[in-house]
Amino acid sequence: MDKNQKKWLWISLGFSAVVLVAVLYFTVDAETITYLKRLNVIYLVLALCTHIVALMFWALRIKFMSRSLGYRVGFLYSLNLVSANMLVAAITPSQAGGEPVRIHELYKAGVKIGDATAIVLTERILDGIVLGVGGAFFMFFLGSEWRRIGSTYSYFMYISWIVITIFVVLFIYSVKKPDLLKRIIHSVSGRFTQKWESRKIEHFAYSIDKEVDNFHKTLTDFMSHGKAGLISGGLFTALFWFCEFIIVSMLLLGLGQPPIFVESLIAQLVIALIMMIPLTPGGSGIAEVVFTSLYGLFVNSSILGILVVLWRSILYYFNILLGLISSLIIVRREASEAG
Image 1: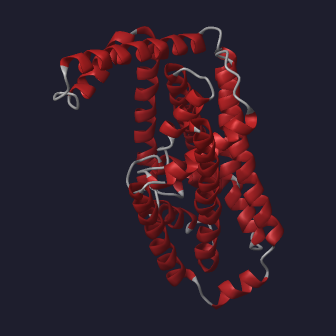
Image 2 (image 1 turned 90 degrees about the horizontal axis):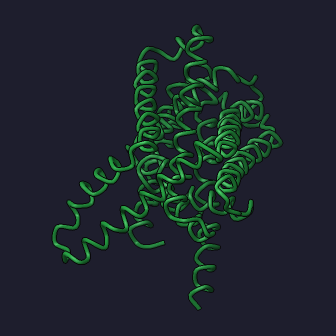
Image 3 (image 1 turned 90 degrees about the vertical axis):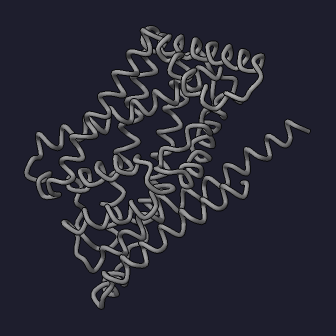
């Protein structure tokens, strides 16, 4: 990890720690100690295991989507790829910042850059579709529960649907019109290559066209004989988010409280969408604030602060630890290959 990454890691940890301390300050009271004495560690371990299972589903998504395009990417390799991605996601704005790591690791596994890019982009499209459909389901079929979180988050959900729809339309359009994607990339990259030599610019432009063609071919393959990859990818995407969303209910059981599966699914859906907005590194600080404001509607205030700490310990601090270990494995592999 270079100095710049370390800096952003400390900034991300700092944001999270400050907000967590503030939440604990305003929520911990004498009743909190009573709840902590009744803490059931088994449910905490079960919550952590559920998160690990979610990461396994993510790894399976990558494995099967790669297989549908003719590549063999091992499950353990995919799992390490996903884990390393979590570290980068924790130090970049929003939690959707680990794509370059996944693309690089797929490339090292023998996947062409264009194909790897298409796989990773399709992952995000599937995330958006699953979250968007989930939001629509909850809003239309669980209206009374949805209204409890307030109109502000409802408006945010509407905006999210619009954004997701735009991305899906662009995704489908890029399959039919790759030249448009080439023009967009050339236009953007041209702003950064103005001082380059003409020969270097020509070579770079050729590389862009080549990779866009590979990307277009991969998308076409997905839409034709790679449909099995899209179906399995969608299934594992739904399983991933379901596992992540029920973790809070397990933590509540550990604190001696009844689970709130329906309310928690709605709250986690909103949090997941907000966390994708590039506001702070890893969404730190933002996640804690949104979590507190949403779960404050459903959970006793005496355990709210402890619940936030436990939740972030599993879905943020554990991810960083896992990412550091996985990144070390990758660095050692790269060093051995270079030697």
